[in-house]
Amino acid sequence: MIPQGTGTVEYNFTRGSWPTVEGNATGSFLPNRSFTHTNQPQTINLTIQSWEDLGSGATSTAASNVQILSNSFGIPQLSTSRRIWLYLPPDYNTSTKYYPVLYMQDGQNLFDNVTSFSGEWQVDETLNTLFNQGDYGAIVVGIDNGGGERLNEYSPWVNPQYGGGDGDDYAAFMANTLKPYIDANYRTRPEPAMNALVGSSMGALIATYGACEFPNAFRKVGNLSPAYWFALSNLNTYINSSVSGLQDYRMYFVAGTNESATMVSNTNAVRNNLLAKGLTSANALTKFDSYGTHTESYWRGEFGALYQWLFQNENLSIATSSYQSPKIIQTLSGKMVVEGIPSPTDFGLYDLWGKQIKTITLSNGTYQFLEELSKGIYILKSKNNEIEAIKLVRN
Image (cartoon, rainbow, N blue to C red; front, top):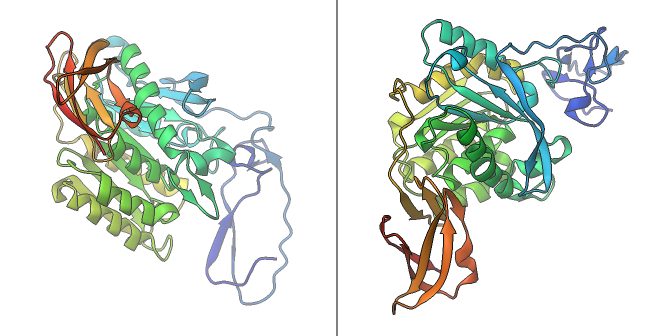
């Protein structure tokens, strides 16, 4: 029994999760079903023709320059693993170029109809077309969602009705485990300004949070139909109390005006709070479409413009990778961010009287070791004196 409403409803059948969605007669992608409310009782007779994960004869639609990096890439922060997709630009194997990188959520839906929930985004076809038109090119890392764990992993905060709470660990995986691996094994531009987090719906929520929480890793964000409602109060409180220095960030917001009653207002509220923390109007593009729907097909159509806008002001045409000088900063939330250190380096942690408290070995990443210290002010100095000392505060 479906409660009476108005308008048209789109839906599909699954066996409990998106990877087990129904398919067409050959086991391939089946567009969303739909029905329209008529203010009268309706009987709808339906037949499930197949299941995509069990269908036969399904043909991959992924381009030849898409590969599975790993079917079980480890996520130590969550004691699990995940399939990771990798898109390399058409000239990757014939050039010496270094590329910006997009880390994208819901990897099942990005490249291949066979694995998608309700149609793929055609990220590979879009980027290949843009490349043929003169675009510099970019690497895309697609991270499969966790199925039943998707809501938990895509929100750092718990929604009393729907879950959540593992988003901080998931974002730490992207920043401290996956990105260092990609940078070490592929010709990337590792600077934060050359790395984007992109997602739709809940994927946009974790993209927004991940870039704010890990400024040493990501400073570009693509938000499509963001599900900020899931943790709106927590997200805005976090931005207002723990985020700063967004002057060098670039964020793209796009959604349909009729996706939900609060989509536009929620998106504007989060964007305005980010603007108050340094994000400039020139670096915050917001687009609301009357035709926009909460669907893969809508996001597919918006991806190309989002990608081009995020990187349109960057100087991508350099012969080799260029990384910023070593730097250590402490975020308002208390975490310590290390960037630009080419190899593990020993540091001494001192109190204000010059007494060494401990020795710490640091490399690029985000650390929370201050939690084990007493409240107060400390000084962090590199043993080789090649990195400027920094004052750290344990509140």
